Image (cartoon, rainbow, N blue to C red; front, side, top):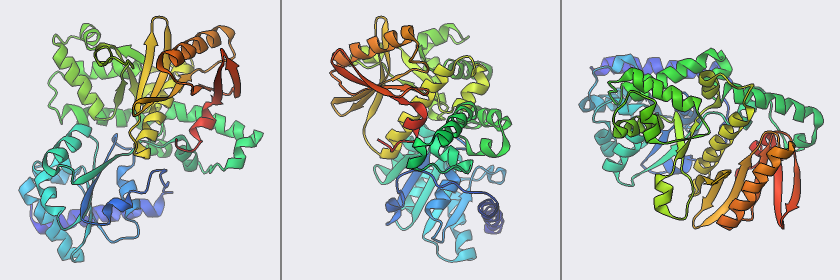
Length: 427
């Protein structure tokens, strides 16, 4: 490809993005300030599930600065090679002069991209985006060895979802009966439709399109998956069984795959696309933690709802999945080192264990209807047992709409409605 052809692509893509910012209501994301990582020549890698809004987010970071932009997830780049990437810089130089800032979307589609960035980062400030964790982190880590910063962007949080609906919730609104009823209704929609920005614009039909693109473009093609049908069946099973324990041997038994190693690879591919994530069972014994079943969650409840078809019948599981997503988001956005697990012992289970360093910071139980006596007895019994086993006094139950505090067996248990917890400050 020659420089003139690249100029046409650059100008076309610039006009497309300018049109988005002129036509659409752009939602400012509730993320930490990442611009500080671009004060000097450096690479900021923004990863996350496909269609989470990484490109728009990158432009927002540089909205007051002149910068170049190329999206390599464009059919015109088919056959483009890494040795030609310097022509991209030539195209920008001829169009706009010597730019200092660049955004490269999905540059990992071009073989040899990491070597190009390794050279470019010495004099330029660059944002790269990607929807595959292993390819981005693995290649960057290999060739840049600590000379970059990575950040994971999630689909809309509940607060961002409300903003997209024109609802900017202030602190006083948390005490308004009318506003609370609106927020709770929106929470049901958020759990049902998920947080992908395009779904808010084009409707639920977009969910399956995003799901299919994730499987095909970010997994099947990228990893050259040969047993495509089996891989898709495995993905559907895992997404449908969110909030449940899985093992690689069990997954082998329910698929036509004969090798546990292949199953493990396939699950890894799905994790690398950010479609699913696994939580380990907490144990003070590392070996027990490693061999225990893991719980699987879907990165977006809208996808889970579209695949599993059980939203109205199983609100509790969707609520648990939403909490898992939010906990991961808070960990990523706080740029901290907390770890998230679940806990289980015989007939007792606690949904989330939050570990900070060597300390268990918080135990969180998800319960849709805590006012049911049988349910409450089971959930609180597990929470108290885990509290004793793990030495944690910060006990939290997230409910649909019940709010209270009580002392049971000398320990304080706080009940918080899900909507209120989602709108609370990042911990």
